Image (cartoon, rainbow, N blue to C red):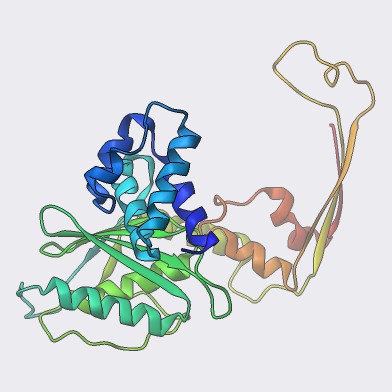
Length: 305
């Protein structure tokens, strides 16, 4: 077991509260009862984790074993995550059909790996015909980041899939396409999906109303035309410190606070326009940002009124 995998297992175990440590490890079922009995769970947590990692090394734990432990931990703490709900509709004349979970897993993994070179996919069956899927995303040139995965809970006999919220909207869209591929009575189609894809029209996002609002506000702010090319905007801040708390060195300071903030991008205005639709900022954006095209300026001074 290499150092990277050992560190991943270590970090995963460290997340587990000591009160639930034995429950999670038993659910993992990778280390035997006899092995667990050799660990003193009354010592400091860091020592417990070190002993458990040694046992995992002796048993030659794989990346999939570590990913499974992470899935189990997430199942026990699923309330701590924000989930997006997708409802998929079948086409006309398509009825519920028998579902082959083994075939689904194999095809699901192949589709993602064809669409994205560096990605790891792990599964864990749950109750009520549900399967938990863990996807660690990489890029064409970088290995998957095991510390920022996406989780999917898919109920095979229902049209619902739950996806942990992610800032990587392209990956979420790719997931929707992949699941939709299998949500049909026709044979599974292993098709190659590119990264620049449009969400299938049969996928309905629960937050559709909010998505429409964001698109409307963005259009009202920036319009339909391509934005002028601008590479940076600079803000010079000169303002006094404001706080509801009484006292403090900064609160008594007579001189204003001064700082310089600079935003830069090969196409700054298009980047700002895409923030809210991508889920990276609230809509509408701050007037300090949207005033750039209105005032035709990219140098601003912010002072107290």
